[in-house]
Length: 409
Image (cartoon, rainbow, N blue to C red; front, side):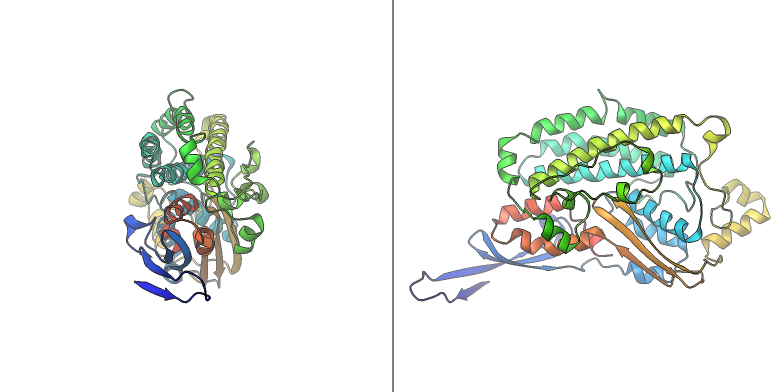
């Protein structure tokens, strides 16, 4: 479709074309649509449309007990589901006043940092794919598979994990899970060596630099005005990380840095996520060492002492009436929550993932709002691509790491 443009007298007459970018998944990084007004290959204007996979999670949550909401969170950012699960469980624990043992906190950190790496390696490798380099994607995918194997060993699931419980985990980590973690962290044969190889492919690659430097840039002021958080905000030069400013799950016990960029362009977003993976590896090594310090009975602790909300062991459910009653009450939402209003946030892979939970003392939330980072920074997308080439719009979308599941809760 073309549109006739009337220009001032003496100007060369031009036509612009309307291009429908999406909503089919292969055309974009999720099911959403961008109507672009094109002057040749240059974008004059963009109009974004969301809601193609809206699943009414927040409304569904008003009719579900706490445990039945956990699988809904899997489907937000499905590239790093455990982060969503842990964020929700921490929110419930804040409302219920449950204190979590240190060992459980460190085990959660291991799962969350693995999820951050799984998310970032996808985002940065896809930037390479959209710039025309497919090799890097293949290099790192084998280690995402290893992360999935660790999750599978812990909870039995891979993508939509439903991992953990309110108060901790459903079972202790097996020796196999720790062996796979050691394999992942091995400096010469594990992910550190592969990440270094990935950086050698891209970071100082002249073609990659030319395609990403100056592309899709945003200033710190504009990013803050939009409500950016996470790597996209830090790439613009703002040092904000929930793990540091509002520590949770024992993050105050770890030594790590928060990488910050300068220009807020695609290249800085790539650099920030790459450095965050190195920092996650640093945290993982520290967390694993802390977990190994627990001996004897302490090494068997994998949940808090909260029988009213933590599911009893399955073997007890099959053999003991009291355990069966607790299991039924918890799963079916027969246990009423205390009256309260809480907001809890974690540093998810894309930024501040928040849960605003209001309880009126019933068996289900009175109101639950998900603060999804993607939904907030996608609003800036038309501004970021205005005046750029069509190919730049695709790379900008890659570098923002737009996940439609998180966008359209």
